[in-house]
Structures are given as C-alpha cells and as structure tokens.
Length: 557
Ligand SMILES: C[S@@+](CC[C@H](N)C(=O)[O-])C[C@H]1O[C@@H](n2cnc3c(N)ncnc32)[C@H](O)[C@@H]1O
Image (cartoon, protein in one colour):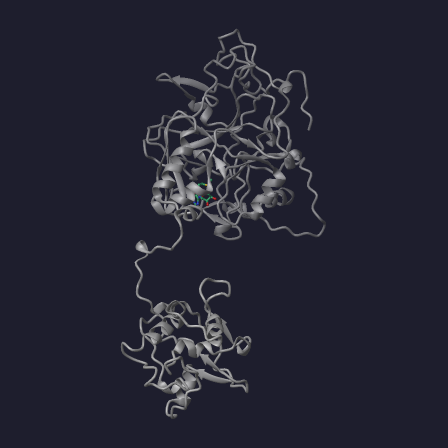
C-alpha cells in the first residue's frame, strides 16, 4: 500500500524528493481528480486505530469509502460527491507503508499554528506522492479541489458564519421539538404567572436578566405547606377552640391566649394601631407562641385574633443583594408589629431533612425545624422527643419569605403560630412580624440564631454517645429552637461567615452540621471557649401556663 502523507514530518522528509510517477488511475479523459485519489483507499486498507473519521459512519452524505466504492465500480464521481466526501484524519503521525496494493492518503493534523487560522493549507507537490502538478494544480483557480480538502481538514477555515441567518435545514415542525433557550421576557412571564396565583398583594422582582433563570427554574411559589411522606396533621378530634361569648373574644379573657406565669392574666398578643391589627411591642420582646382563633372557636375564626391566617397584606419584592444571594424587601412602609408572611415549604421528617442537608451541594440552607414544643418552656424538658420533629424545607417550594436573609440587627422576627390546628404541636406556622417600623424598600431580615448563648445544658437530656469518642466542641451553642438548621457548605466546614454588615455583627450565621455538634455539646457541658463570648442575655421565654386544650384526647406520640 502506498501512503500519501501530508503530515509535517513527512513534509520535512520528502520536500526535496522528485515527484514519482502517478500511481493513480485516470478518468476517461486521462485526468484524475484528487477525490478519486482518495477514493482509491480500500476500506480494508484502513490502518486500524490510527485514524479517526471526522464524521460518524451513519451521518448523512457519502464518505470517502462511499466514493471509493463508486470509483472502484467505475461510477461517475459527481460534484455532489465531491462536496460531500468525508476524510479520515490521523490521530498519530504517519503510518508505516505496507505491502498491499493501492495507496493511502494521510492528512496532517493541524498544528497549533494552523488551528483557528483562516488560512488555506497548500500541501507541497512532494507531499502528494504520485500526483503531477500539471495534472492537479495545487494553487490558483484551477485547484478548487484543494480548497474542498482543506475545508474538510480544517473546518475552522470556513468563512465566518452569521448564525442569525443560517438555516439548519430543519422543518419548523421539527424545530419546535427542540427546547429553546428561555428569553428574559419568557422567564419574567413565567414568574408573573406563578406569583399571580399567590394570595395577597403583588410579588415583584427587581432582578437582572442573568439571575432570572435562577429564580424561575429552581423555585416554585406555594400558598400553603406541602406535606410529604411521614408528615401528617393530628386527627381533627385533637383540635379545639375558645368558649368566649360568641363574637366577643377579648384580649383579656380569650381562651386561645396563654396565661402569664403564676397569674390568670393573659399574655396579650395583638392590638389595633390605626385600624390595623399588629403585635404589641410587649409581645415582640418575648419568646412565646401565638394561638389564633379558628372555626372551632365560638367566634368561628372571625374575630381580631386571626391575623396570620388572614394572609399577607404587604407587597413584597425579591431583589439580588450581590453578596448574600437574593433578598426580600417591601415597596410599602411596614409598621412595628405588622405581620409580613409565613415561612412555607415542603414539610418533611427529621430523617429526610438530615438526608437533604447532607446532599445539599448548593450551599444555601432553607431548612427550618418545627421544634418549638421541645423547648424547655414551662419548666418541662421535652428534648427527648428531639428526633421526632418535622422540618420545613423552603428550597424548592416556598413563600417570598424564603428569600429573607439573616441580620445580627434584624428588623423582623419569626413567631410560632397555631392557626387552625390548635391540637397540633408538631405542625404549626412560622410567621414573620416587623420588630420596628420599616421604611419602604428596606431589606427585610431576621436573626437565624436569635439567642445563641442562652442554653444551659438540659440535665435530663438522654444522649447515647459511643464510649471513647472525642467529639469536637463547637464554638457556639444554640438556645433558640425556632431557627434554621443551617448547613452552609459554601463557607467551609465549620464557620458560615455573616455578611450582614451590622455594627453588632456576630461574624457567623451558624455552624455546619450543628445539630450533631449541639448534641455533643450538651453532653460535654458549657463550652470553655464561651468565656470569650459576651455573657448570655437573660432568658426571654415567658413561663406561660396556657396550653391549647385538647378535646379530651391525648396525642399519640
Ligand atoms: C433562607 S436563604 C436566604 C435567601 C438566599 N439569599 C437566596 O438567595 O435564596 C439562607 C441563605 O442565604 C445566605 N445568607 C443569608 N443571610 C446571610 C448573611 N447575613 N451573610 C451571609 N450569607 C447569608 C446563606 O447562604 C444562607 O444559607
């Protein structure tokens, strides 16, 4: 087998050699085209593993072997064949010549210099062993074949293409089957369609086009919790309502309100300011749950004590903060104590939450533990139930509050609220209220870890640690159980840096994997490093005595 080698090394070797006699058969006119030169490579003579085809076997258009077949059968090689032929390109330097008859053309791989250059490659006549230049001109208008070869070898050498006018030869019917890249307008439309279904004043977006798809394709707005496997509400029989004189639920007497500790006085929740029902400043300073009136109450859930269940009354806007991802603000001024919205999402079991937390590559955390009832309020330690919580995951589905960032000097706080299911201590609402007057356009924030230093290790906690295990001591303890279970891998294994920028910034959001660390910490007692931290604030939790009444039933655990 003869080899016509167009590689550089061959070039060096052969550049001074005399042209030899043509080995190629001629067409009827005694002429021979370069294509028929290529065509003479017999399929059986392809050197295995030494070259790869530019185009796949099953792609459209004749291959060089197809043309070879035509040539072998003395069929006319048409101009169409000429334009459509495919060429083999070596992945290695020149193959060795063999004994078989015929010849082989080896096209050089483009050098770095050639790659990307809009330059036509002209092989030297000596490279094309057996080709007479007079028969097969290598330059000038008589050499269209070499242009074609070059286009096949160096596809980048094609003329620059204006893609906006290129037709791909695909019917419009077929084209419609291909997903098109969504335009900014389409994404905005999709977001608008989604948010139009959400109750309350408009949800708007002030987000650059490049961030739109992050919002539109990764998140869905919902109006209520989505309960997933293993999460159920208590049986209706466990729920109850107040026995106030119908239509006269009073903040001083309504059964739905908790009692102050050691007193018959009620913990007052809402009051009216300028015709608007908002949380009292006194309530904003305490850690207590709200129980609102519901259908089972004498008022049928139609009194003033129905603020959270009445839904969002403020407009909200999602915007991009730059360094902390998206954030939330309101185009309306908000007054102190005003209800903003609930935190919503998929409600999942603790086990599922742990699995999601582990698999969370994305960095941001949207998990919120519903473990209010496990706190050491009213003197009881209920921490032993701690594996039994439900968790709200707002990552894929949620309300606008899912975009609220942390601040060490927050303007909102989150309050646990039982609205319609008083008997359900595992599934309740997380409601955001304004801590102070908030001017329109101000970012709405809350403290992800509002009471980091208050926890004394509960003595009755039963922990089973393997003997001899030396757990790492976390730097911070977490006292407030109404909080995120944050695990922000984007900021390193332990510390999640806080970027709130407030003067009193604590420097970190939470510790990664802190649930495990919290358990370990509780066994070890107070953290020695805590000495360097500010002294813990006094406990804020009111010693209330009111518990939602059950209809004579005990909830099964
Ligand atoms: C509930 S999301 C808040 C919305 C989030 N920014 C977004 O774009 O979807 C919580 C995450 O926001 C980021 N984040 C919130 N507040 C932050 C702060 N003060 N400093 C740094 N990152 C913050 C953290 O990555 C955290 O895991």
